[in-house]
Length: 478
Image (cartoon, rainbow, N blue to C red; front, side, top):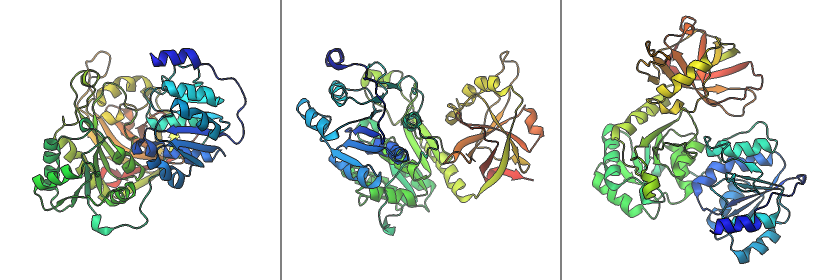
């Protein structure tokens, strides 16, 4: 009712006006979530390249992070979302605002009034229903992750080469006494987002037995430290220890940077590991819809899904993080540990024209392949065809499918090999995660210098060359 009333009273289309230069961008971050702040951190670095001036509204605990580490021009501490009495002083303190960026859920009634009083020239939001939202990103980015949503804003503001790497604050000095080869974080902000005691006990004990030569550290917050120490005692393995001394984000980041693998439920630890390019096994609840908070695709990241009962979350408001097996986590850890040992190869390639049939065939193949290899589910249904500088043969794929009957008739079947790789382009600031795609029935298999690659949709901008980075153990070069 409050939303309907506020929409009737104050929700109006923005008055058209030219954007001032330099832009004044306001971004509210009063949700007090460290993980959300880490994911959006690159936005501040990239928007400064446009000469913009940025103000962030956030809780006192995150003020220094935004000011000192993210380089935000102005950070205004707020206890929570503004109240009616606090709106006037806050609006006067902000002054003229050109762009208001709100990419977390729906705009609340009090925020509608706040926008009405600020009178920005442009509002970016996922709340497409509101008249005041000129940059409607809800439906347009429904299947994109949070990083891509902030990227859409940057592109609309005129950014070109965007570096999506997160900013993760590290300690000034590293304490070698806190090193753990495998870091495990079973805890989140709510019990239903955390592993249950029995599930965490079984998992960490299995890891300790699988790698007795590795030190395994249990991450916890001050609020979960008592349970973590009880977990350590119940596990009763000499190579397992609760890292209670890691009581700040910087200290945790230092441990993540030194670890060989990080295992974490969906929380800030996942996004810190992504930002530090650490080997990561992230545990998320399975969902029938797209989850924008999944870590971006990367050769260093694996996602394990906890199975959910149909309509469990809509009916109960709670997630179940415990429906997976120890093997579901042990297997990707073993892969990541092995790949950290293997040296990477780099091969130059020319982008060439393909046979012109992949777009139609991949649209039918990808849904079948992704049932057993879900990380390729969001790939564009078309291949990038590469003429490599050296003949290459794939000998150890990361995934080999079962024979799949993908043709319309269903009378024939085909096997597909997938290998995690990275592509490096001159016009893109970071390496792009991709997969070498080998269809066993493809005529390309007869030409070892020509290979097909799949990835999420790429803006090639006329690029004719790239560099392919591959794990050395998986391929054979002539």
